[in-house]
Image (cartoon, rainbow, N blue to C red; front, side):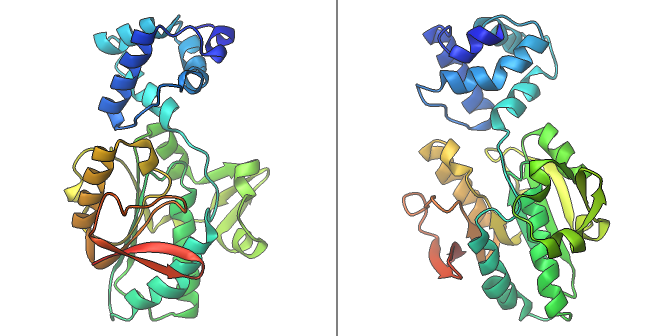
Length: 282
């Protein structure tokens, strides 16, 4: 697909676009609307130029034939990469620090387990780790059983970035204050590197939310923010059912600030604190 043509999003045959919609939903659960041709073109133009593919029909043929082992993963990477930043929706982290962590820490020796689902380039799980560390500095006897933060994403490219923990340019500073930069990061010239003492609590793993994930174990808190909006109602309901099985009794689920689960699950009660909203498993 030539870049000028692709950017217009006008050269997809309707049947090719419909076939790509079906591919993406089957591959990772994401539901594309009927008017997202421009988004698809802008996300895939570089990949298709790099591989010498002209037009959506040719891309679909390659995907169907399986001739390129990593093409499917590269397409999913391109379509699922989203911008994120440190402490996005700050009231969630204030609620975590001032309400939820004190509740959990009241159980002596508890091992804290938090899951960052669809963690993208890693800012969310590292922000969670910073919040826990700041809480422990004030409450040094908390979580003597340890802290585990599981971070998952479907994009291998994003997971590689997250594991490195090095952020440059705009992504290096957006959402951080000076104290956090000094306490939790190493200066790497134009970049910031997450310190090892923060990284050691976070484990990254490739995971598709539309598949089973019982092997992850149970968690006290799940962050799955600004993700469910991309799934069909049936997929949303199925994912939320899996989340209920993955949470400890009374565990908390964080969604995006504009998301709601009232139409998809009655297993949670809404809790408001510090300007943030979370859902507590009944």
